Image (tube, rainbow over all chains, first blue to last red; front, side):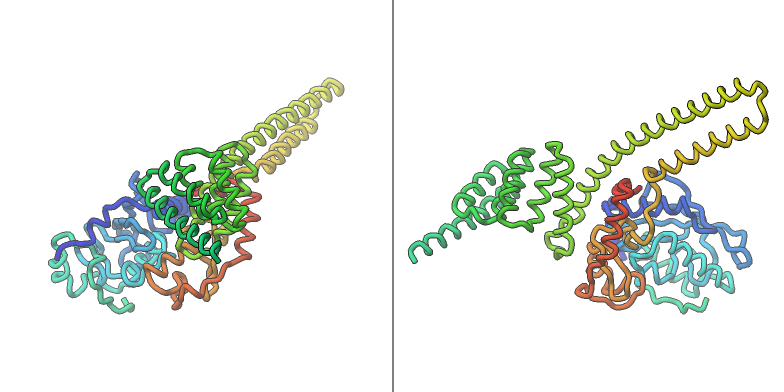
Length: 162
Length: 282
């Protein structure tokens, strides 16, 4: 499968998207969500965010990195969010860093922010009871070989219990 | 009857000339477009669109005096023409008629709110208005800050002088007098800091900002779930993302949006007091 969505990802941000990201960045710096650190770059379109596993969970003392890429028409389209290697071992996180989380795809809403996405991901990590890959990991990762974005995956979402 | 037929013919011809003007305008042949609109105006001088279209051509050529003339004529014919008020506002700002220019832009914004998305100009008008207001604020606040500073210096000097005078009278300087003098200087600092607060850009309160744009409301509308959004943003969401409320996720139809006049008033009152909030990204 070719990645048809790739060109749109590389387009520059629209004015609305740029304004909004600037606001989100300012707000983040004023009031950063607990457990996250943003790596400052001059690229507003790609954010690298450090995630620290919450104390008292399986991921305590672990540190991971999220890469967030914003499309031209953010927030009318969701950002692409993946873990940079090594991705945490988790039943909803594939070894290539793709995350199975409905709000990143079908259930996206423009009222969500990077900060609220981060909180959702941290809570997903925190509620896990075992450190393991999704059962279909190998098959999924093989299918993504040619650099396909997780936004092009047709996700069927795992249950919410984990 | 003959007369009626003649004027109908004239009207038809004027419409055709307008179309010609529009296609010239699209090709950026503004001179030719102006000629076409001028002919249309000669045939049917009472159609406001001919005047505003011609004004737009003049605007492209930065011929602001003519923009003003044509817009004033259009407003005479149609008091509610958003475009005429908007371009008149820009023309007045160009000729340094600041207060009147802002007034026209504000009028255009009021008229433009609630218009259906085709020809919705609110964001464009807002940007020009915001630019003008912010510039005014920068000048005024710099002046105010300079005035406050020099007043503060004068007050401090007076206090110090008073202190020197007291010391020369009482011969021995008491600890107490010294403490009270420092207290007074500190109090003066606080008073002046308070006075400068209104001119210090801070954060616009969340309840005056849209959850989608994160910016202060221009044209707030309320959803059936009771959440307020920026009209253009929520309409785009309903068109592109889905027919649901972005916060509550309840199903929603665009026709169910209602202007939120209370928030609109609150924004106006806030901007009146905190003019710096016109600047995006502040």
